[in-house]
Image (cartoon, rainbow over all chains, first blue to last red; front, side):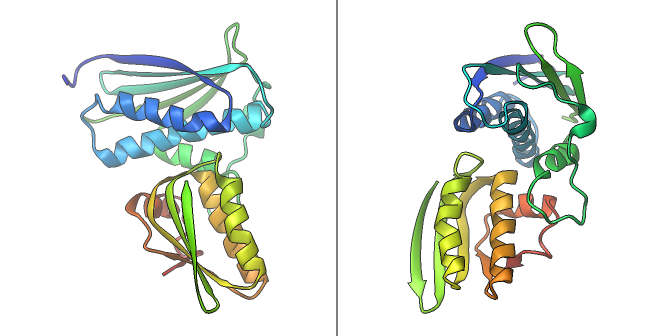
Length: 142
Length: 99
């Protein structure tokens, strides 16, 4: 595919741990269209799946819901932006747990992975009907 | 995720297969923890695990900690490239037993 092509794809997912495989499939499908190293594709898929997992675990506290979450992947001129939209509990950026490098307790690892993989992680208040809008960005050299 | 458990003396070998994410971590714990509680040495064969996320890594950490507490150990065997990468990203290669 033409490397300069604009990619902008979005999909809704049920807010459930059972949706995570679908989130990965969607992400893999999108990154198949981009001429980047497989290792980077795998990392991006992991970051996206971790962010989706955090919505299930934290915004919805693993509670069953009919709500959907939306994931939008955009790439233009080497700027990758991944947006996550949900209607769960408002996320307070200050309460997001970051794992310390020497901490081997389970938990907080997902956010740690996201930070390692992406260039920037921004939490925003979602525009109606959304409550939370998480934006992950990364400059892609291809 | 699918699995197979074989026994060799006091060693339980757990072959895990597939993708290990939040959706299957309880199942993974149900397989591994009773073996550790029975004070078996547990070898987790991760050759056929194509994907593991932070939830899967948490299972590895909890298993390692439980085994240490009970005086036994969990050894990770034949780790697939993708899982090793995630273990290294979590900076756990010096903490977990990589066999």
